[in-house]
Amino acid sequence: MKVLKCLKNTYLDIKNHLQDDSFDSLLWLVNIMPSLAGFSLRQDKIAAPFWILHLSLLFYVYGVGSVVYQVKYAQSPTEFIKSYVNISIFIIVVNGSYWFLTKRSLVKTVLKKVNKSDELARRSLLLRTKHKKSLFAIKKIVMMFYGVNLFQEFIIYMPHRVDVFNDNYSMTPCVGLEPLTVSPNQEICRLILCVQELTIMTVVLDYQALLFLLIAHTTLMYQMLAEEIMTLANSDENIQDVKETLPKLINRHIMILDTIDKLKTLYSVPTGVDFGSNALCMSLFCFLSLQEYVTFMPIILYVFAVFFLYCYLCQCLINASVDFERAVYSCGWENLEWRDKKTIYVMLLQAQKPIELLAANIIPINIATFASTIQAIYKFVTVVKF
Image (tube, rainbow, N blue to C red; front, side):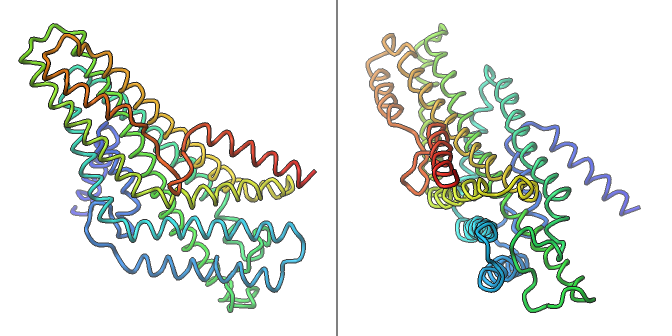
């Protein structure tokens, strides 16, 4: 009976979170796999066994396996290219793992600030429906990201990856366990490869999903703030109401700007590493044959989707900040008292400062960067391959 009651409560909890369109539910969704693995985003401490297992297998399977393959077995350019893809995957996973281990305290600070900003935004009765619908749209993006990648991982990628006789990935599996044709070496190697892919999936998908969630939510906060400040011009509020509303809007604007600054600190270097690795992967994929594309298709789709979502969501954030700047200028400040006019002026000065996330503090993350990168890859491949 206790087991059935526990299962029922778990089912109801999952159902409530999936039906609830709030930031807390979105964070719960992103936090499912980290919680199961022992490094929940809400906790102060992490489970050492998971990270010891994950990093040990990562360096053994991808690190040692790639080096041994290149030294002993790689001969043709295609084999070296596929091996370099494995090295790029290794770099992406190490980047996400290092981020989870070193940025934990700052992540918790950002989540608390974002949650507080969301709580203040929900108090607006005028935009409560928009807030709920927008969070539902963000939830769909996150769930689609998880769903597509999990489907590819379990249905397409993992069955081939854990096959010890599949040499399409140009990597030496389970160095030191040879020969892999006998038992129990073969079974042990399959288990090692399976556990490794599961830990990689847990780290990489949650790292990316949290980034997408934070950027999309910050964009929503900017959009709601822009619409709320326009109510100063469209409503018949008296001066006292304006004096009460304006400080609240300023406080929320400050919180949004502080969140963006912390996002820059959190993701500047990691996104720079991801940009370089993703661009390298997309370039290398262009040198593979059509038959080999099928083998690497899950990786190709993941790399392209992540690169596009980086640029698209950051472009949405930039557009929202521009809309907020226009809203501040058009909020009817000319009808306010002199002191409120000066307050609006200071807010406008802050709003006019460009909001932009930079990869490695150098490359702006926006749609123009996505387009120029794809164009550069196309030109490079055209010149080298043809």
